Amino acid sequence: MDLIIEGLFQAFRLIAGLDAEVFSVSLLTLQVTLMATLISTVIGVAAGTAVALNEFPGRTFTVGLINTGMGVPPVVVGLITTVLLWRHGVLGRLELLYTPSAIIIAQVLIATPMVMGITLSSIQQIPRAFRLQVMALGASRFQMLWYLYREARLPLLAAIMAGFGSVISEVGASIMVGGNIRGHTRVLTTATVMETSRGNFDTAIALGIILMVLTYAVNYILSRIQQRGRQR
Amino acid sequence: MTGGFVLRAEGLRVWNERNFRIDIDDLSVREGEVLGIIGHNGSGKTTLLLALAGLKKPDCGTLSFRGAPVDIHGPMTEYRSRLSMAFQEPLLLHATVFDNVAMGLRIRKMRGRELRSRVEEYCGLFNVGHLVKRQARTLSGGEARRVSLARAMAIRPDLLLLDEPFSSLDLPTRDALLNDFDGIAKKIGGTIILATHDRVEAMRLCTTLAVMNAGKIIQSGAPSEVINGPADEFVAAFVGVETIIEARVAEATSAGFFAEAGGVRIEVTGEAREGESVLLGIRPEQVVLSLSDNLCGTSLRNAFRGVITRTVNMGPHHRVTLDCGFPLVAYVAPHSKEELGLREGLEVTAAFKATAVHLVRKSAGK
Image (spheres, helix red, strand yellow):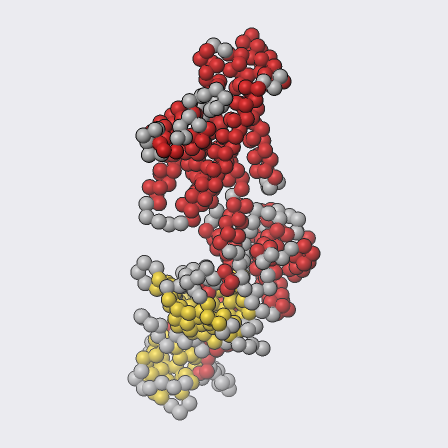
């Protein structure tokens, strides 16, 4: 109990004192996860919509792959990304390993199937007749998509939240491709793991609390957008 | 009343895996016309409407809109922006009634006061003006249909396509909506294609009928032409000719011919060759029932004794089936049934004019 209380005090001191290191780790965490979420949203929503609206050979196989992708462990993604970005790997020339960009790439690989899978099911649940009705009122394909997203806004924002949740909470991939380098690739999750392993529980708890507050803040904003058009 | 063609489809075909889903040689709708596409469920009405609306790519054929060809292989956005369509289901947005009626107008970039006044005008016409702020999901079935029709018509399309918009509603709701729609359509004018399986609805609203079966238009014309001169057995059955008798022409006369069926001779006006096999159609409302067989002094040329095999209460009338050597269906008013004491097993005289018998062609494939 004392440990937790001490942790809370430490967290308060670190936040209130605007500790430079904590601030930079938090900022990098936000930058990396928001960028990864944004990229995953663009790719996941577009690809999920394309799979939902089109018939093509191997569609069921593709849907199975997407659903599997939603459950792939971050360490596996970390391993794949490391192999790809390794000096002699396919993308080795880009020299991205142990950079924030590498973390973003790994997190995009984690979050995209999540966004894609939820987008796919939320678009699929809207009857085909609804799409025809929108088109029958003279809509272009883009206008039809806009109305489709408008109808599916609740599950679509849930898809974005799930994507964000999966990347802000993962640690395995970030450590593997980022290396937890102080002042360069250290993010809140990797820092928490490190402080815990060193026995600095108070600092680890402080970092954990900051992580929770950031997660809540982002989800609160997304929830505000989601619930704005809620049916009463 | 009607002007040039608004839309003309020629050689329009849509395939499914094995055969044609629709195969339309020539179908057109003129300015101001209300064209009813009538046929049973599965006859291809919806597929035809979707193809005409640019929502289903035809495999071949041409469409021309006000004389100009439509590129059926392109996105057809320009063409679609001049039409609108309402479906059997209201398919409303999860939004207010206002937003729903405004949908097609917003797609056309209408904004501000113009948008508001147009939405209010059409909500008012369809008696949903008091519901504009309501969420669409809280509406009753009838209200939702009204909103759906208001949305489709608010655009003021050059051509309105309606796919059974009055079906699966309870009778009073449907009647009220039909009445209102009829009044609005007449007031606003405009060109409409209405697909329905309800012949009464079609006769009430349409200026032209096209009867569809198995993906093809088998007869089109003014409602009176189609109803009084069904082109074949299918159309006859569809437009309510309940008695269709297979007969052989026994004797041709200058005024018509006598045909034999079930051991009786039926007098018919029209032309047929002696020995020819024909189908004769008799509308049930044109059959008169009497307890006496004395029909002297009337113009009824055909009178047969028959036994009532079945009576069914249809609401406004009773449907009486007789065995006169051939099955014959008659409609009688409830009070006539009471007065005559019509019941199953009773022998009565059924009579009809020679002009009430329609010579009907056999349906293809039969």
